[in-house]
Length: 597
Image (cartoon, rainbow, N blue to C red; front, top):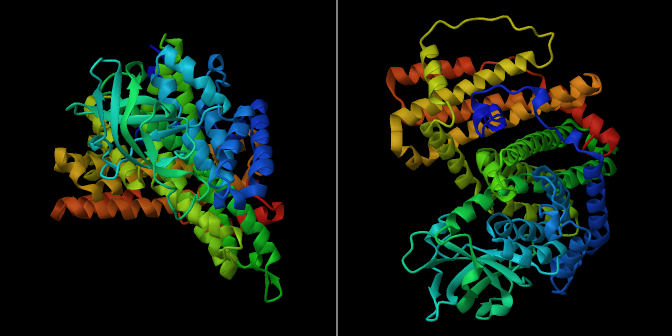
């Protein structure tokens, strides 16, 4: 049996238990990775933080490209690019870690993400040997900047409906590309464009590598945006832009597949890529709430402020846990596929594709944690939070885009549920058998087993098992009742997605805290344990709410009553004193003056 078939499959967290010792946690990053983090942080402190106002003003158009080139000189642009092409050839989890730290760099994080992700990975994963040799070294060093041209005025989430055309020249040497692209990050200074167009009456897109010097490219002025003001965003027009036939990327009509697969890795990198920004917000809120006095004391002595600080930390801890758990699962899958003879590029594609569900979860959870943190940050700062002179205003504006790009969170929610159901139909995940078992359980007499509460997280793991039954019960019934019409029921799809997200998030936090407790002792890990317990306690209520809404959407009569009784049984858990745990978490953060602990 291969290593791949032994390991957990993407989406299988819904039907399988995972041991704490089998997951990766951020505390396990190597010394080499920590050195890269420090180098990245030094770069931000030196090149970006002192110039953040200048960057956002865009008064000096050459500034951001200059900073990007400096990042290339430090190796930060080549983290994912193999050494043979001038990069560092690091793992997915390492690339995520660097994106995490860059997340504190404001709008530059968008510039960085567009270049190293969607602007580079299509060539890395799909390019010919000649294309990789020609372009990747320039992208790794920052000699060239890149951008990704997919979105069109009438083709956003429905990317494959794009109208940009590629027509073969009379002599067969070039494709002439004509069309309009919009919301193109880095367009203002890009040397290289990954462009998607349709040839003749093709159903699917084809991708091309387009150099700026090819000609036939014009642009509108920079877009005036709500946030990420220091990142270049323009409309790009192609007017008979001549592209050599050898610059077609992969095969004809393979463009949509390229777009989907590259967005998978973009999603999980966005999930980690917001974390640096969230931690910065938390640190600033701790400092401000310590300095700000009301009624003669620091405002962080008040329970309402402590609750906000703690909740920001809890959600951040959970996002970290699920992101790096999923990232390592992807790396493990890639290593196994390479060991079985697959090429490195193909293994990376297959490895990421296998965990596309978890990539979507990371993107959704991370972007919503960021939104929560900046919103509470403004609230903690009070009137100063609304001032453009204070740091929360920029953070608040910059954060909002994260729920939109790399696929809106709504689209990602529906995609992840659709992927689970399709994999179940193909037999890739054994979802229907356990779903039928849960269905039979609904009409049986419940069994009452004694749980050994002396074992850390024994009770919480029983809760997680039951929460997985909620998804199996509701998802299984919805799939049977609605069949091929389920994807038209977007509200139900989003309900099911919320159940999935909360299960994966809560389980990731529990397993991380358990692994830390096993390594360092329960007393040393008390605050991590508390964060996991608070999150799970409230995830139960969120799952109950989402599942109840779904049940009310497609059931009636006795069937509905049975399912609601099952939901009550499966979401039953002991009451947790979340107020006290939050206070403990906040007090520890305030004493340390930062997150993480």
